[in-house]
Amino acid sequence: MSSIRSELQEQAQNAIIQYAIFRWESAVVIAGTILLLAFFPHPFTWWPAWIWLLLGILGVAAIIYTSVTDASANGRMLRELYQERFNPRRIKDQGLRADVETALAYQSSIEEQVQQRDGDVLRERLEDTANRLSEWVANIYQLALQLDAYRHDTLLAREWQTVPQEVQEWTTRRAQEADSHVQQELDEVLESKQKQLELLQQLRRRMKRAELQMEQSLTALATIYNQLHLIDIQELDSGRSQRLQEGIQEQVERLNDLIGSINEVYDYHTARGGVTV
Image (cartoon, rainbow, N blue to C red):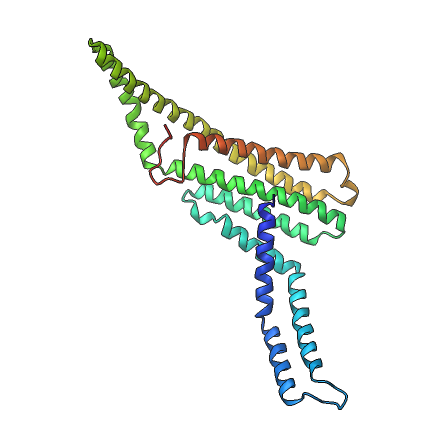
């Protein structure tokens, strides 16, 4: 299965190719080729007209090749696509938005390191690291969206005000009811309310974990970023490099599990909000 980074790299390559085709240099080459074919098809007696066409094609191909292999252009386009995919402006909470921007900044800096490193073996290993980091940043963004929705969910806030009180009221009413049939109906209502309260409490605990995990993830991401500066070709097969890969994978899996556990009781995509009973 392709990673998020691989998908964005493919999009970046396609965008760069389109850009290269419509660059002013390409326009000049194409226009020059047309003019030469029209007015100087045979500058020499031995010069066939199709050579101008061949030279024009080679010129445009060279422009496309230099654009596609331009590390700075690829890095710039990839950063733009990351910003589009993981748009911090979707997050209302300023602190969470800053967290996502920090994660994207680390991702961007790591991409620059990958592009600047020489050597096929080192570059390949760092590419694999960058792929895993992309999944990590994606999870940080997902967690930020969940926390942001939770903090701005007015219905959820209203449930916290009303549900505990309702549980108490239904409990009192159940204790005062003498009719067995009514008691049975009250038991069903009370059970539903208690379950709703329990889910609210579960969600609060998981969101507290999410807040702590967000902070821990950003700290770990900063540590990984600093460690990447110290990796060189001699350390590719060392235990240090292996521990780095394992640490990244552990962070990805930890966030995956936390995001999944939150999704079990809270759907932040719905406009209604609230817990899933």
